[in-house]
Image (cartoon, rainbow, N blue to C red; front, side):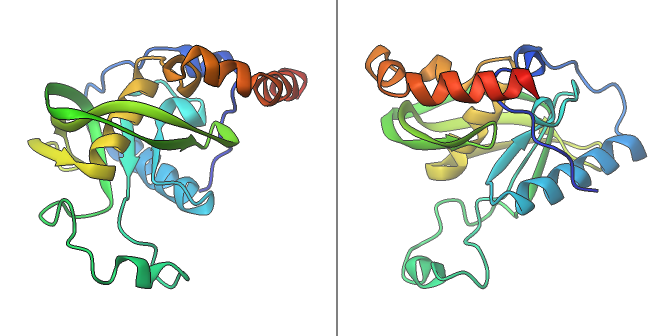
Length: 187
């Protein structure tokens, strides 16, 4: 079932996630609903806080969109994380390490519609997580997958895109941010 995405200005986005005690049908249903919501909104990641929940869960799918006009853009590229099946459901994720240099790239967020900004993050992340079968896994990710994992980890810690922006970026986007926050709070 598709959920509403919580937008900037809603206090739910600042709540730190709570660990999932047991992976049961409720968590599996949440993950399924989150994937449906993410796909319906053309996202590559979504954290439970973004649908008004507090569980330490996020979903990611960074595979090229099938049937899109951009499929050819990926045709000649070597996948960055070929051994990582998509979509991913990460429960109780924990960053173990960051590696590689820093990379700056444009990020967006479903909780900040139509707002995109350059964010600097480590190029590689190693994370441990529980999957839907209650197995503990560890992966090392690079590229877009690394960025998506770090972005969704931020959500689980109540850290938002606006918190990662430079002072200049915040000033540049202040009008859009103010309007979004006002619209969210008046809804």
